[in-house]
Length: 350
Ligand SMILES: Nc1ncnc2c1ncn2[C@@H]1O[C@H](COP(=O)(O)OP(=O)(O)OP(=O)(O)O)[C@@H](O)[C@H]1O
Image 1: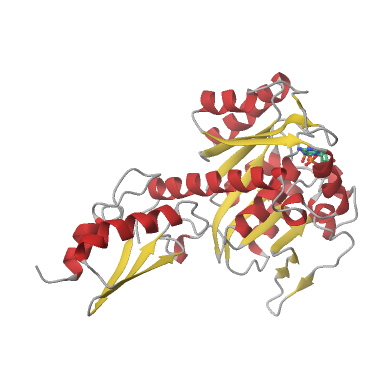
Image 2: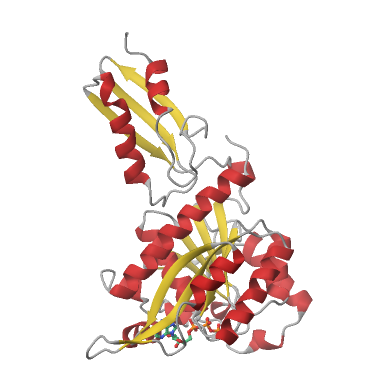
């Protein structure tokens, strides 16, 4: 049988998306097939650019096409199937909210390092510090005291550090001022963060929410479409109970919970490396099971993680090969996969 685009398409029906459990053709992921003589050029649409399964999908495509005897197969990946008019914020494909029930569980540390890990996976990432009462991202990224600028259209330009666009209330008002703000001012501030900022082109805008289930969370979900939420918890029972409340809040406002990340899983001794489960064991995984969502993994409690936060150099940027950074990178891959599934469930195909 002569080689044709139809034959290539037929062969691609045998390639499954490992996350979605359906073949690439029925999922509408095959964007283009070009044949030139005995060479094929394919465009495959991914729902999320940091798709952790890119490599596997490409290998499966090559395997499926090998019986056709092509001399060369070129696989290009497209960044996503969501048409621009459906973006939640102009230029921004996904808004991902990072929440915790309880304060001090490391939500801001996780938001910063997840943003960096997604960026290392090839995505364009912004980080909005919406923890108005206790902003920490300016400090975390070494941007304390930096002044924001506006562009020609009078839109605020976020600051940039380690390849991440960062906007924190700490760069707008003096420390402590936002502490006394109430509902309408909070709402107005979040609105401004979403509408009056030139984020440029982003695959993910990671939002660091205040702990708990208050006005900021409601404003964010009222003002934009949040693709999903990440729940950060420690394995401790009290933290888990509050984390469940944060998950309930997402459910009420119809934001899917993409996964649970357990922080401070076990203390790793900086001298001998011995793990000590100070806050208990397995709580995050159990919570993910109860919520029927993904477990994004465990991040240990380590001295270097605490020090890196204080130094203004998050661990994924400071020591990307270290075990803490690797835990964040695994979590970011899981998160990207969860978003990709979510995008297919909730969006019409382009
Ligand atoms: N896995 C970890 N290992 C060591 N220290 C950590 C870890 N996670 C967070 N920390 C430290 O714990 C402190 C609190 O973390 P962080 O500010 O991220 O928490 P949070 O939940 O965002 O707090 P808040 O409720 O105040 O917003 C910081 O000093 C941070 O460096």
